Image 1 (cartoon, helix red, strand yellow):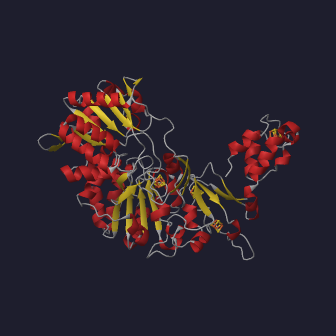
Image 2 (cartoon, chains in turn purple, yellow):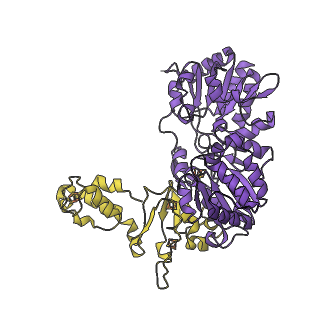
Image 3 (cartoon, protein in one colour):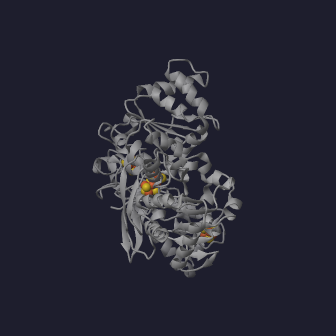
Length: 404
Length: 152
Ligand code: SF4
Ligand code: SF4
Ligand code: SF4
Ligand code: SF4
């Protein structure tokens, strides 16, 4: 059995059939996972100023850039092992760098509240064994974490849920559109207007407090009724919800207080986002947007977006991430004006504009390590085949060595 | 499982309509859905299409067993989510501590398995829609988010 790194569910029940040092067939991995395990379509090659070179020259050039930068940002980290992340944080400390990750425009706010223990949470195994009411909110798990419903939440039989999903569990979807997940929650789909989560939460809090909510009264009372009866509930908070209430995030805490039988689960996409958030939190008390000086300073101006727009940084090293493709606004011109180092197994939009590229191994396929599942469980990653590519952890070692 | 594209590539692709479909693509879809027979495409009977014809017949053969219950998986729609694997009552009964609990199947007695990211069906005879005491079971169709499972 090997582990899939296609998403933060880190399914560790995968069979990989290897022939001639290639994965010939996968079993039990979903389509997304199977594609991930078969590797990149376009492999990255080492380059400097868009000219192909050898890996040693790329590393040397990177050392030059990180040594000469006045204020460098180390960004990415969500597709790296815990071991590589720890070394990345160490490198950031040594360089007095700014460090940030994808959670900065994703689930950071939520994971921070969970690590601060402001929100109750539980493990996915608890959900499989005990949960009777499941709420997918702003999350299309069926698309982003395809095996979430089948492995842990709705379909499996668990210790106290032996009778199958039709009788023992209820799945509810709250979303702005009828996603594939919502289709499965037949009869329990609550469609809300775009950015309507805040109002929906406030109305739900009223309904749970025994008041008559003004907003969609009938449906709201029905939903409150189901939630109140839950023995063990889970709210799967997707990026849709986190994003929509980011200005007033603590209303989610207020809602959770009204639902003592519920746990909050962050629906994480990238396989080790939570790992990075936990590591940085342990080191600094914050999950992202940190600058190391004598001590760690946390400020929104250290997010990748702000840093680029405000020109707070004069170089950036991006590890296993494609901000050019995933950031919510165009940042091409900001990135193009500073040296960009891109460390990744595959060609990406970011690698195409990078000053230096360093190809690395595909974690979970060509190199092993550990990662943290969306619920906080440490999972071992497998090295399935051997390749000549350096794991990103080893690249961090080389950089640490070169600057000390 | 064979895909529409694979079948289409083997057809003459002239859209001659002799099969009664308006395009070869439509015929490929009908083949996959087992609504038409390979023989309906008369141009395929010509000698120079012999290899294509044989390939088509062999591609359509493996799921011939499915005809009795009519179970078809459309691989191009399947996301490999495994909902059907875990929900099928036969899988639960035959593998309670594997598939039934949401884990990887632990034996070969299950109907559904995910291979290379897509579901394949075997042991079709175990399906509750089959045999003397058959029931109209929907436990694999209803949990499928993409409509990839069909009974014809
Ligand atoms: S659900 Fe995620 S971890 Fe599991 S097999 Fe699919 S992509 Fe891989
Ligand atoms: S008879 Fe065959 S070649 Fe002609 S349109 Fe039909 S499928 Fe295509
Ligand atoms: S119809 Fe029922 S028994 Fe047959 S394969 Fe589907 S879920 Fe299983
Ligand atoms: S439920 Fe549908 S999409 Fe999911 S594995 Fe089964 S056939 Fe494929």
